[in-house]
Amino acid sequence: MILMENIASEEEMFKFGFELAKRIVCPATIELIGDVGAGKTTITKGIAQGLGVEDEVTSPSFTLSKKYSFPGGNLVHYDFYRLSDPGIMCEDLAENIAEPNTVTVVEWADTVADLLPEGHKKYLIKINDDGTRTIEEL
Image 1 (cartoon, rainbow, N blue to C red):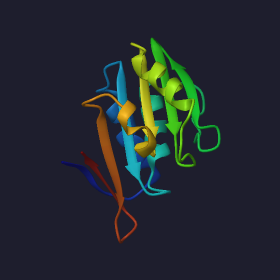
Image 2: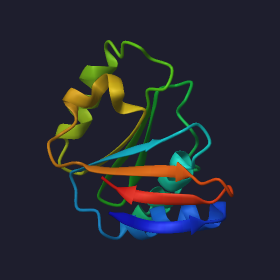
Image 3: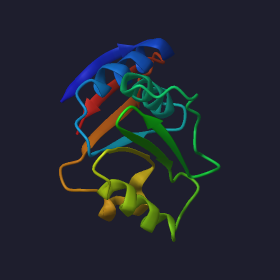
Image 4: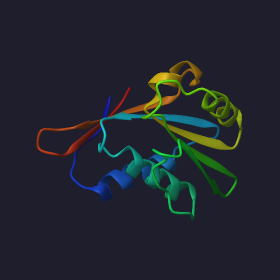
């Protein structure tokens, strides 16, 4: 199901995440799918602000994961882009997914797909020919 089409700016991507956060019920796992530069981290920044995270949210591409506190819980953001074998990160991911007050956002989840809970939310971000984005719920 297409949720948004012709997203033309970072601000619109951020707003999508912010609005998404209003519908999140913990525990929650969200998988963001899209090419490099599609806007996955921008959406995560919106989710974070919508949840009440006060810290600056940055991409976990080099650290693999980052954890942020919000009133009543935590947001854990994973980026498995650089990993062909997530190794010990599987244990960390499984622990966070099981936490009742945690929102888990995963980018590049192919190597950990079997750890993600059944029925988790999946969003595909497509870069259109004109540079705009389309977000589809899978």
